[in-house]
Length: 536
Image 1 (tube, one colour):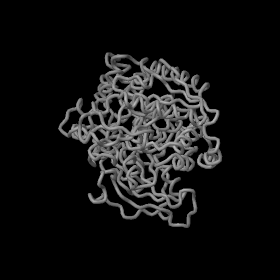
Image 2 (cartoon, rainbow, N blue to C red):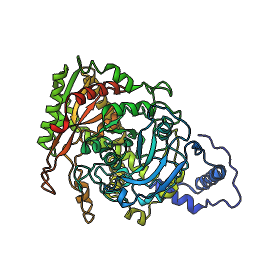
Image 3 (tube, rainbow, N blue to C red):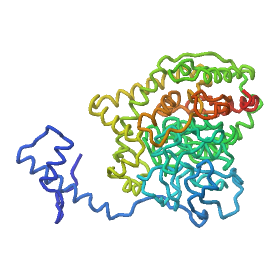
Image 4 (tube, helix red, strand yellow):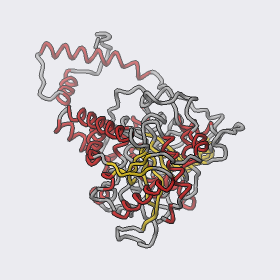
């Protein structure tokens, strides 16, 4: 790589001590001769001089249309309007012009890691320092332009890193079916608000199941789309390799409708690779679903993935409930068979290895190698990670950083590459089975909603509440396959805590071919129309 110049500005802050500190911290064990050290000092000083003018330039971010979409009544929700703590911030945003778009008359909420210009976004943690975005996330704009009304920001788990719903700075989010029980995370508020009827639909984010797990716990429909199908622009990232944004709705048809609005290339997000439809050429999933509704699942082959039901923490009642629900596809004209992918038993380990290594760097502020929109003013609020900020950070986030950095140091520089190669191998295994079957079935979560952890619990007590929860969801963030969770039954709790007579939803996950959300919708809609999940 060439050096632009050897000019050194007056007052350049790079000294020989600075050079030696950088080498000591990042090239431990490396030393230079006196002559070479002076040369590297000049090169580092010249680098500082060369890039210094960048800081004087204004950042380059999309401007929101605040005249057409004014923000009204921004406020922290009062207790009486936030019974289950699903809201983080309230605001009303809608088109000031006449709008007959496909979402006309619909209300929605967005996870609190989405940018909405002028509205605080905390991502469930004080570490964000009450960040007020200057832009709207791309898919928020798409919903507004389609005629929907935004009612606010939904509570989000701390740094989007907790699969349960007790870690947010705004307090625990309660399951509408049983106060004091989890809604799942990290799109906890979205699930709560849709299930409780406070909004028609919501936009969540999913890095390891954070749309699908909450959907399962509260009895709604949640889709993690094919990687890149929905642009992630203007949403706080956990890890570029596993970030997904998607719809959370009361039913399958609404989910397809919302995906029709938010899917498609935006020209910014480089997660959107080959196969992503261009803007304006996105399939109208809901219209295709309506047209094919009569056909249902006739002629489809449904595979029940046997390894997905065999985990140490799997509630056998959940396994039985999901298998029984999946078998009902046969009543609708599909062929239903058990299938095996033995490597699925190692999927959680493969997902953790790759995700933890890369996410640990992201959580330390190291963002590189991508062409997309960066939320730079947010980064300036989050870093450096001081003791005070660490005290405000959920234990799972700190555990992710510690585990990731340990893995880099202990397992060596090739370990991440091996994890990614094994992820690709596993993707090929799923693809091979999906070449034989239209849909693969797994339980979304291995148990129904449990109770919140106590605020006084330590890291193990808190993390144990969601131990093993995403064994069937996380890997599809890494392989990129679409996963759709629909409610398929009701069960009483089995944790011995709280009211043991309540009934809680069970979620069934449908996994499909890349960019074949349409088949998932068609199968799920046929099942939803034929069976009353609350009676199963």
